[in-house]
Image (cartoon, rainbow, N blue to C red; front, side, top):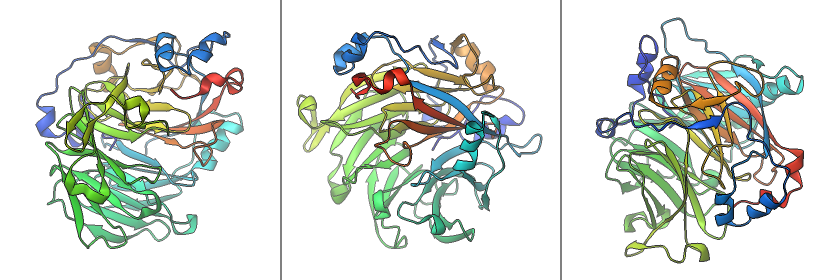
Length: 456
């Protein structure tokens, strides 16, 4: 879940307590941030030289070239919070439906809100980017605070179904049209469910919980049996391979991410990713390549790209019998994440990673470079690009920004309804103050015809 937790006082303190990392991990978290200077609200310029673009074909050469932004980001719409003064409306999770037409949000307000994406993007096409958007198209009140919302794939727009995991350890599916629960699943012994995901086609569902387990079951028969994978700490994130391969990635508070073959969950992990210094809060599958690739995010203030299998990872260490040690390709830093969940998502078709930050900014990274290519201040609107000038995300700046909230959830719309369309996409970000912002992103003209846009 993209779970906010903030050191702020007054009304934001409720969000801080409700969305902190699991106690077992947070006891060991300290304020270890490095000062970083990045271009804020404006993209790092795309250089006219084509020689650097050619280097992007080579992983090593790309690391040596400076990061650049080949995308134009625009703030399309802002949805203000509807919370009363003194109340918290922190957004904990956001998700686009498989068609890209609907957006769902959930958090500590005990509501699932659904928005029409097209109406938000119309504000941008009308030249009123950043304007206040209308409220949700539908809203479902739920009995508990939500840690995760996920659209069930395979359902038609007329019969949309959204699933959610809550603080009471219950997974529930709701019929969006009727606003009623279809079923509940309470198999995590009342321990908070941090993450929920569906396999392509909704043949399987998985949930991760504070009880240190990930459950895999058939959502068509949620009361039936299930398979269990156990971790050394609270399971904070789960995600199925979107390509349809029978793999489930799991991240936990024991600082480790692993991948299981769901056909043989009891045999242990098929790949393991060790290297993060603190709890792994998100795990997302990256785009296709010669090897399987996963991006992880942790409370150590880094995202990391891993790969295993294939020729490029032939030298990977074998940790245990049947378990490969994934190779760390690159580590990404610049955002601040030490005490809270700030969200992380991968636009697989474009090779872009987005995350929030305790400094109250939205960060976007290109998988080819370790530093961000675009940063937007969330606390105030300064036009399409946001504030100009450097952004310092050291301890003092993080504390000052957190007093007014921070970015707690992000999600990409995967291209224009599919991963193969690299021309344009949409990014949504939610804040611990309940504000929702939608950005459009489109490849710059000088980059559109350049071969250098190849991933890794």
